[in-house]
Image 1 (cartoon, rainbow, N blue to C red):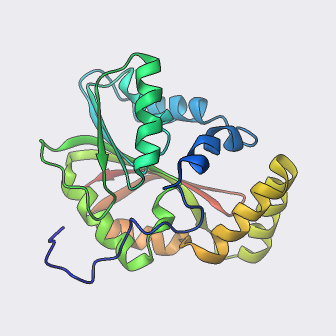
Image 2 (cartoon, rainbow, N blue to C red):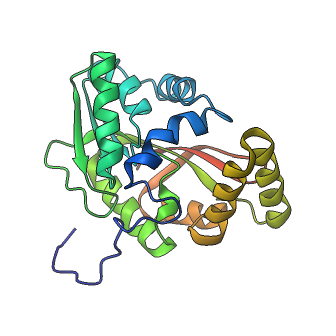
Length: 233
């Protein structure tokens, strides 16, 4: 994005948990394992997208690198993008342990990553888009659209909320996470909805459409967790 914009949203300013801290990053995988199997989730997404050996993928908010590593095992190149150097360092270690060398690691985010290569086949983001306020989500989606080939795919999974019974559904999710991971997950979820920028599904639907995407599949689990498979128009 044009670096002359002095009022650009600072996506490097950590919202919620501070994942610029190596100690937080070191505990990330173990804590999330209490309520999800990220590796199996990644494999399922890759299967659904039908990605193969000639495909190039950008993973925004790549975190500790679980998805990037799984994608690298079956794709030509993966660009792992994260605003946390500590996350990228962890992901590099994970890639080395897995024996993959086709991941390019980039310190950046939805608004600051500049893709210099040819247009890519797929963009993926999981539990990262909520770090942006809605206006900047729209800007980010336009940027992702420009990075994709015609007909390229976008996968998004995040806290995206149905308006009907939103408060009740969020409370139920927090209770479920507390049961799975105790006080840590409860406090983490409460901080998420208090301080971060999850949005309604009808807002996300409009942002995607205006950015040039067709939603091919949408599911809002328990009224709170949204999964979108989209294609560039």
